[in-house]
Image 1 (tube, rainbow, N blue to C red):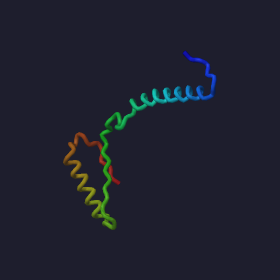
Image 2: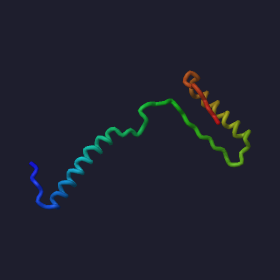
Image 3: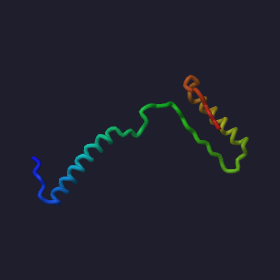
Image 4: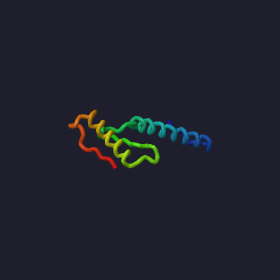
Amino acid sequence: MCVAESSAGQAQALYCRSFWAFASFHSHGFLARLDFFPAVDSGQIRLHLRLPAASRIEETERTADQVESLIRHVIPAAEIETILDN
């Protein structure tokens, strides 16, 4: 039963309790829906390749080709749609 508040302190306390009850209720619903991982597996692999500074472009290209060759060796051809390098 809610009784009319006779002092500002009691009204403020009721307001605070109501606010925290509301916030607590909604935050639990939010946390229950929070996903740390994507819902779908897009099947995409991103790889960043870095060679030492001042490496020749030919060496970089050769290393990228070796990595691509290794990927094609490990992952079956039927599962690879596109390999993009730039």
